[in-house]
Length: 330
Image (cartoon, rainbow, N blue to C red):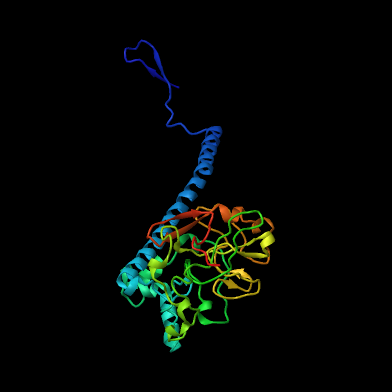
């Protein structure tokens, strides 16, 4: 305190000394820190889900654009023919595929990639086709750890296989598991909607035969229920009394442990091993280390996430519990 004489001389006036400011006590500071930590723990999962929902929306937009490109191509073609013949995966390294064609005369690398047929309908007329590659790239799939491309074998198999797949090509057909669950169908009627060819393909595509040529879209039954293009993923499930195991993802061919090819590198998958949109879990992609639970058709690996899909009538959506084609071929 300070003591001053009163102006009237009548005595002493006592004035309290002012404090320049007030600081937090340690307890107050700890309470604030605890509240901030609590808010972060509450909000972070929500933010992560929101980011994945945004990525899933981009992927859904991509398959929708690819589907509309196919439908525009079909409306311009003779007899409403679908584009093709194509390889199943939709590759997104256009420049590299074009380089392979230039280096290997008589081999068609880029030309049997579905986007090669519909590039102009995607609004991209450039040689680099960067827009096409962007449409063929899914940010959700790109975040999932997968096996690297192999270093030997067919040149195109050294490239990443892509994030989407066209519904073309054959595969195993099993009606039901021993538990009575409907099994995803893979062969289709008619066979090979977009035609089919392995890579590299012969220059004379007509020599591949009628089954390998693209089909008329009008020949596809239930176009509003039949998938055209979807996320590329693969896993196996057991079929009990129907024997062994088989593919339940959008890739329709069984993959053996030691096989290297479009989606496998010596037993490790180069594609996600589960439907990955809005999926909170993670699962190994090593085919040699599968648990019994992972082989079930109702395993969380197969039933939790969503598969973005566009159908032959042009509508698109996320599918939970992938069931494959509705036009099975037996």
